[in-house]
Image (cartoon, one colour):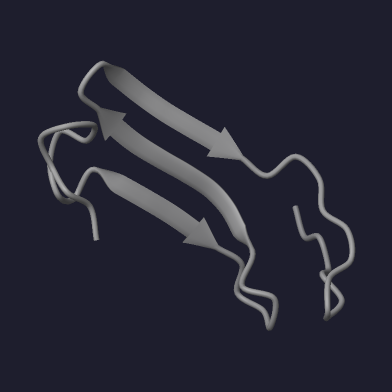
Length: 56
């Protein structure tokens, strides 16, 4: 749940991509902020409980 007004422009301004496996890793986050925008992509991972096949 996003609270609009202070940091985020709207309640629906954050999108999170989650891996479709048992780990449920956040792969990407995009957000519209009051002072611009944010995009974060997963760069590396280690110590997962389950194997994580990378498919391009």
